[in-house]
Image (cartoon, rainbow, N blue to C red; front, top):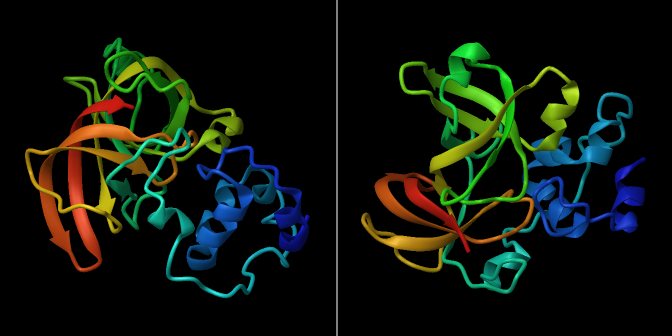
Length: 221
């Protein structure tokens, strides 16, 4: 399958974290590395040289920037994007059974899967990703959510339900001024449901191309 044929299919499965294949390809104009987030294209990246790279006219603006609404029509304040060095959004979590960290011998580089439950988000989607850091004494895990493709490798560790304690990332696009101690509605750029989240910003660091933030007290909706 080549890019031209793919864009005409309008599969819109949502696994990549975009509302539609059209929006996914528009983002890929600027960041060709995200092609591997697509369930269908990823299977062909290593076999067909005509898929990547590909030439498209670059656009500085993303259509959704002017809408500021999630897939349910609710307004939000900014997009949260992941750090350039990370393979996906950075999330700090604690398994509902912290002893699993020791029992499963979870370590940096492991693929794990689980679902945020209850007051900490309550997201209906199982999250999959790569571990960046582990605190064995407390069960705290810092990982990067990479999407369902990582779990298909078959060597992931299942931690079951977990509490999402915080998100860390970069804000490059916002419709409001960000302040420490304020609660905001935001949307993770690659959220598969394209739903807004809510959280309190308790860390801000100005960067050359955006603002680094830490968001705690997470809710969906």
